Image 1 (tube, rainbow, N blue to C red):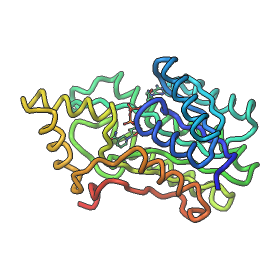
Image 2 (image 1 turned 120 degrees about the vertical axis):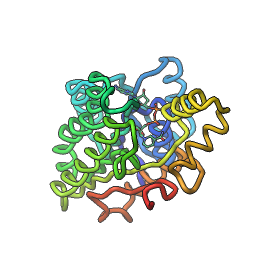
Image 3 (image 1 turned 90 degrees about the vertical axis):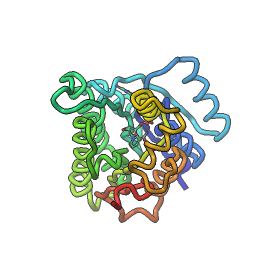
Length: 260
Ligand code: NAD
């Protein structure tokens, strides 16, 4: 079991990260939450996790777009709790525009949060994980880590990058008790995707419901959203002994999106 392990889940105040935090807590893991949001709501999430699952929680508002803040978050957990067993690099943002119109500051922010933050977190946590002789690094990539789509130059570049980073660190850590994997979700109904549904509805002058069907049928053959809980259980599986030899790889959870 995972009881007593300590996980840092970046970007866990919403969406997929929150689903992963909840699922790991249900498996007995102590959780360090991170992300932006209303302090009272974040307090409520912590209370809920602690009461429902009898685990300890912490929270940091460290900004994953800043190298020093990412490294500082990992160092603070190592100093205060003495261990980092599971690192889930999940924080991410999206912006869509044709490449010739893509704002430079959006490119820089997406590369920083969706890719460089994972590098900084991994580089800081790995020495302690090696000392522990056990560790799990799980990078939340995307179907866009495996295939492209129009108007997502920065996102697709960052997600392909994190799949590459996963392979390199998987190789470097092989045989140390640490595994490093990427999960590549298809569409998940979170605030990040709600924005894209609203944009389709507006551009095409169709209802949100029709826009949702269009979004799904365009890419995801199952025509069903992946849920944050399903991704949480995928993370829990990667933390289980059954997955000891799964490392350096990317696992698609995408309703056959990337099978095409
Ligand atoms: P979301 O917008 O619901 O949540 C994003 C989280 O990241 C929030 O907690 C937010 O506060 C945090 N965050 C954003 N910028 C941050 C920063 N600078 N520093 C710290 N935290 C920050 O989005 P989501 O859909 O849950 O996305 C989570 C991850 O899953 C992202 O990496 C995203 O690319 C990936 N993903 C999402 C989907 C999808 O369909 N929703 C599909 C594949 C991959």
